[in-house]
Image (cartoon, rainbow over all chains, first blue to last red; front, side, top):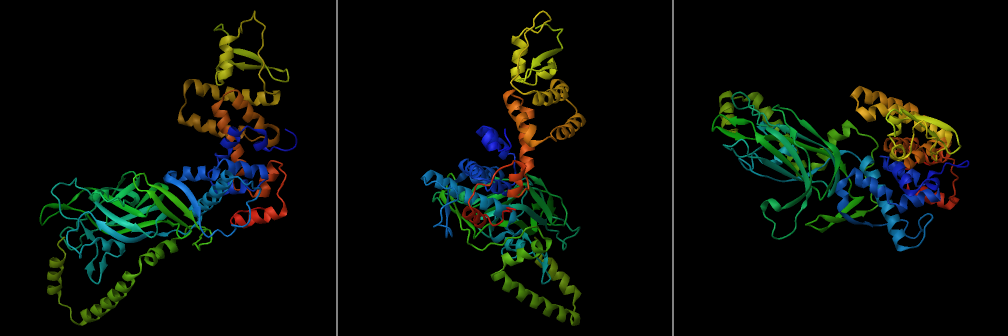
Length: 365
Length: 162
């Protein structure tokens, strides 16, 4: 073998390929592509960055092609380039997927819910709307804040909560659901579900879409059992999932709590949190064919993106609020102000009987 | 082949003789075929040649003898754990001298387990290494021009080169 152990030179293609695909961090592949001309040629020519990304995120298999926006180096030729169209396409793939791989592991981890889309059923609207699940607290301004399903005789009837994520392309890692404890009912029943399942996908723009065909689901998680406990319950996905299309649905499967008053089963949730890495504006998508879900992956390396090397609890705690702001921001300030006013008044004018009556009236599910 | 034969003799590409037990030889498909085709009884003096050099063949046979009992009978979890540790120790070898010879021998002898192990070992050598460290490990000359290197640095801002 001489003094060099340049295995890409010495071994046949399949063996070198197998060695490099034993790597699991795309940044290793990027470094390997900078070792020498022949190594760069091998990594780019075999589309190894793309293959590694596909292994990490099978959802990318429906990317029909990649497009680069605002490319800075459009004028400068790629290192060691040959001019064929095919080679240029391979180089583009290498650049985009290498950057995507880096984005998927280094962009900041934040709350990813952008807004609510809707619940499969709501008992009292808007008092028990899905919008309440964006708020972590379960009492706001002295009032309980939660979403409640309609009551059902059959405990097997499922419910869904559907959300739009902050951007159409996010890496989702963890979903948390806080079942609601009806502290105003005798026995403090907790209206949790038996289990939860997470679906991710994109809107189905075809006109003949039926009610449940409004979205095309490209990922369905395993079922996670839920505890009947008043706490924010974390459901960590087995692998981070690339949500393409920005729609996330939480399926609540099976009811366990009956309401004494009407003997019907309900599910109530006080808070939902989705944690991951939004990839926009560096990356965007354009759905090509809604039925098959094929899309164009757009990449803009110049777009400013939140790079954050490590997970930080602080950021996780603060960021969901940042993301969910807009109108709600204002509402919260108003609520806070009103809360303070009420507290001041209550100190001087506390009428226990009235309060209890109000409570029961307002909070039957 | 007579059932009384427990070990066979093979020649390396350097012409040295090596003994390998029948159960260990079964880990390799080509060796297994050889066992079926060639007469290994005492009155037959044909010694098959394996196109692997002596230094590499010693290691390959060592691996086969260690893995044969488990491959032939199945093993408990604790055995599997122990074997994994043994594999890691076994693979602590010079890259230049022997790792890639083992890889090629495992490929030639159709030994999936050893082949996977050697590939993973080679990949592990590169994990987390900078570009120049990888060049050092494999004795590779940097053949990019200085302008090209500048361009690579610009293109991969998060990549550690030195």
